[in-house]
Image (cartoon, rainbow, N blue to C red; front, side, top):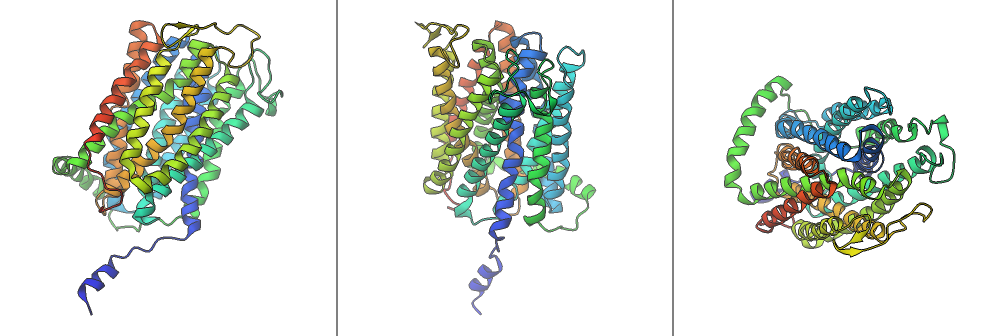
Length: 467
């Protein structure tokens, strides 16, 4: 027998059937409402407008909470990823941190406006849910390379993000049409009284975004546990893996200088992902503070942004497989830079910093002023390129991670996306506080996108594993 052929046959990977891949894809659908409803379009603006003392204080507090959650994730991600590699299965980790997502999201229901405990409960629930969502995503990502061949990773990642955006879109549409009402009219976007007897005065529709996120995750993540195969157990006990994981983490960090492209990519990802997270975290809060947008305006904005995000993620996955992840990410960063500059140039009564524009007056309708319409357009651009940036970053990591150590390096990938995530939101919060201006806070993000793009430009990246 030809030894080379035998060796190749031994290394052949058997990929699971389509139903297993489809079930895996629905993890993004299950988890996305947390990012859509809570961190961006419903609960975060509600926190700034109805729980905090004023929008500026709300943006600052939300920034500090986001930063604290990011610090916790940064400290633990690579260690836990290494432990998962040594023990084998990922599903127990996904279940554990998924439970934190459910717990933290459910807590948000109890953040009642006017209650003394409302702000602490909201921030604690948000931090717990964020940690759960991000860690569950890390271990879900580590399953990618066992599902499809390397040349299909761009499709897999892009399709997952697109399906996730669709899940976020549907959950947002349900919230706006049936649950969350305009506090002035008492009606939802569909002109209905909120269902389930939700009280408008105590903003129960906005607060219900938490329990809805928790229930949504439980229902739609279940097929993945049933149908998607997991890595086999290695026989190593958790305590033994934890001890070895610390040593493996130290060795990996020492090894990074000998993997210059991988280290440079992780550093670039650390910076530009931080900026993107902060941009989404504060986009709705910014619009609420500058333009006075309420739940309905923010919800429509979110629906439109999610539609462009779905399209962008799907197209980005195809483009990724065609030209590679690096060009896709660099193009997305350039567009996000332009969007940030455009947002900073807007005010209630001007565009492009100095061009005056008539502000909206009561009764003018939705998005009546020119600055609001420009902000809406810039938001659609952000949605269009955010999906490709995230999906192509994920597929690029899957392609360049060393074989047999995918969980460990996806832990570093999560670390690189979170190690400064406490810095980005915290710097936004500090700038907002120091200058008493929401625009000053968002100006920080331009420097982050510039630095991340410059670092990524020097990465030598394959279009396929081993390419």
